[in-house]
Image (cartoon, rainbow, N blue to C red; front, side):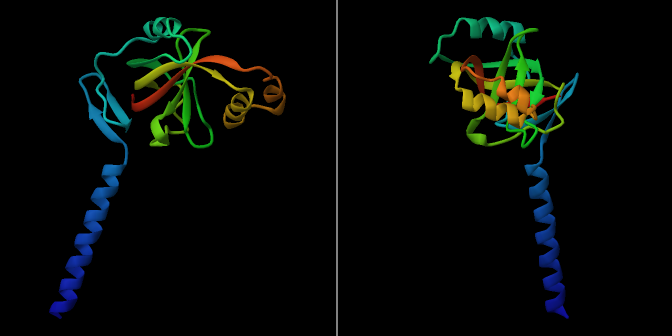
Length: 167
């Protein structure tokens, strides 16, 4: 009887410990006075960030190969519809940045379009080849006709996020 009780107690302890670990793996919530943020990747703070227009000015001063560490806020325009492995953030009405996640260490929710985010990481300018542009168009669910229109490499403002806060 005592051995059954001991086994039951050990099983209960293991199940309880597993549940706590799973809840820690889930998205962390950071409470602020104004809003609550879901945290992805490295832990970052919601202070001292640039606006998307200020970030655009920084990007415009970069050359291909330049990199800067920065934090800025924007609203998600588009998220990879397959895994959430990238997102596009507008910098102005006509300009956006492609955000990928450091070492593919985390992903964004597939339904995150339109959500306000703060991203921290490295900004840089790159030339994206046609094959990669077509791959991203497929991930975004574009039609075959839209994908066929991609015929030239593109100079892009890119961002590798090590951490994201989503409102």
